[in-house]
Amino acid sequence: MTETGSAENQAAQPVAPGTVSETPAKKKGPRGKVTVFGTWCKGCGICVAFCPTGVLSLDENGHPYVEFAEKCSACHWCDTHCPDLAIIVEPIE
Amino acid sequence: MAHEEPINYYEYLRPNKKYPNVWCSGCGIGVVMGSLIRAIDRIGLDKNDVAVVSGIGCTGRMPVYMDFNTMHTTHGRALAFATGLKISRPKLHVIVVMGDGDAMAIGGNHFLHACRRNIDMTAIVVNNWIYGMTGGQYSPTTPLNARATTAPYGNVEQAMPICEVAAAAGASYVARTTVYHATEMDKFLEAAIRKHGFSVVETVSYCHTTFGRLNKRGGVVDMMRWLKDNSVGQIAAQKLDEEEKAAKIVRGVVCDVEKPEYLDLYQQVIDRAMEAK
Image (tube, rainbow over all chains, first blue to last red):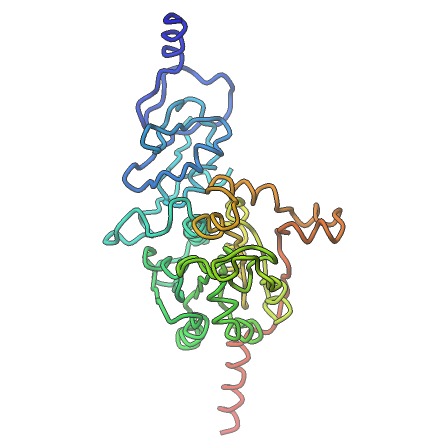
């Protein structure tokens, strides 16, 4: 029980907000860097619910943070739909 | 993809205002504001050449945050003030943002006559089916049998089709979209601002705080998903029969025609009068 728990923790290790993980993306294609401005965000959860690749997650206070930064495909769903203009996605090479 | 380079929203927002903005968490009006900023950025208009006029209501708070020439006017009279502004300063790009109550109820007559005159302005109607700011009274666009605080057993009035009314009254560009389809909204707003003539863009939004609570539609995410599932494009709408079509929100350009514009016609009158002297 404890072993599986630790293995899961290692696999889902959260990346610091706003940074891009060193691990390369599995698929080739456009990638982006997601930045969430915590002071502007009201935590409605639209970005987390509709992100097609599941980059964002909600923390214990109900605010989104970038959990899997390397999954971002720069589709711009979150920054075009953020009602608080609190997300910016920058395309990266 | 929406846009290649990330847009700098701060350039178009007033730095001395309090953020986060005043709207409820997840309100679609914020999406419309972002879309309007992107459309203006894409056209490349100078901030001093744009005037944003609003009336009263949740949508009326939008110009407070945007760093253009702005005017916050009385309830329903945004189009009347904007008409005066456009006539006195014809080079300004006048954009009027209104809610459904502001545009269709209190300012309904101004709306009809602004469409009829075909003056070169852009009207954005944020339709959330209810008077949200005052506590959830039913509005002219509340659907039949939907609940509101003033209709606790269901609304008995038919909803007013904003786009069809605008097209029939003589607007030259009319389009409808939802806040879920923000990329499409960018396109429609860009076309509406570029159009020489009166243009109306109805953006179907939601009010989860009053409408969603009273009608048991769930939270922000549920109402956003509802917009996704219950709206169809015009090509898909042609395959549906009348009953199915009535239950859906049909997105797309309702009318896009070339008509003589008010200020051009007025200039001709001025020229004729000067010649007669």
